[in-house]
Structure formats: C-alpha cells, structure tokens
Length: 135
Image (cartoon, rainbow, N blue to C red):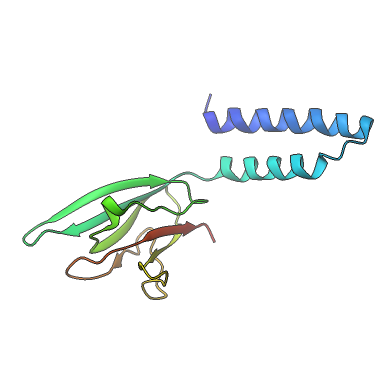
C-alpha cells in the first residue's frame, strides 16, 4: 500500500477517534486536531517537485536533479551556488516555481514549471532558494 494513503488512512482514523472523544468529553483539542488532519490531507495529495539544476562549466553543462516537497522551500548552497537554468521534470503536473536571489528578491517575475524552464544566465548565478506552489 502506498505510504501516502497509509498515512492518510491513519489520520482519518485518528481524527474520527478524537472527534468522538471530543464530543463525549468536550475536549479543547479539536481545533489543533482538525488543523493536523487538514495538513496531513494536503501533504498526502502532492508529490515532490523534481527540479533539474543546470550549471555551465565552460564547454559543457552539468545537471543535478533535486526532489523536495512543495510545501517547503529548497535551500542548499552546495547545489545552488552556480545555476544557469532550472527545469521542472516532475511530477506530471506543473508547480509554479520561483528562484530567489541571495538578497531575497526573485529572479524576475517569471515562474518555471513543466515545459517552462527558467534560463537565468549563460554563465552561472547564485540562487538562495527555490520555492514551488501548486497554484
């Protein structure tokens, strides 16, 4: 069984159990458990963003593939210290991803995603972080 579905089923069972307990005992943990349930449900629905980080090495390119959950920003100076282009290659639906400069501003207003790569430079630039959103 898929781990996401297993986790989702466990969250549903826990939510159902605690909801029954709350109605019987008038427990004040309902908002926290409902929020936990909603977060678990949302994270179970989305797959990791799969991004290719391209680096120009003078006469050739070097690609590094990274995977990260879209609810978190990706920061790794070892990989993002030299970037010429960024490509989303998975999952099968588009995330709207943005590259951020070291000063915290975005590299333009352009997003990148499936079929829409972000070409930053013919040389390499430093990217502080990559953030992706479904919509």
